Image (cartoon, rainbow, N blue to C red):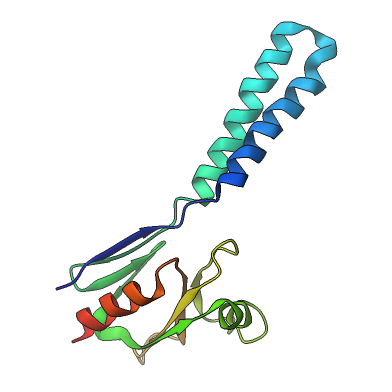
Length: 147
């Protein structure tokens, strides 16, 4: 049984922005003195870093015959056909082709994705959309657990 794990981490530029938020907080508190300025620098950067880290902590895993994506755990028996999506198709499935009932773990900074049909008749979810940097590997791992 093939396993797969991927963390959808935020890009490096977002961490630079988190530091810039800290600097902006420090500049806002500069008129109040050195100590408040340092507090603004540390507090603002820390808060922004926590937000970036939380958003970039989404994981996609295949463990024990199930797909675990974000908060969802879907058994292999409920998974159907897998479609690898290039950047253009992924954008289409995130926007005008999207079904509001679909479960999506999407990150706009990751251009490629995988769309997996959900075949469970009791589940109203038509498909699962997963942003991934490695669509071929994820598709192969999904095919392995369905076999």
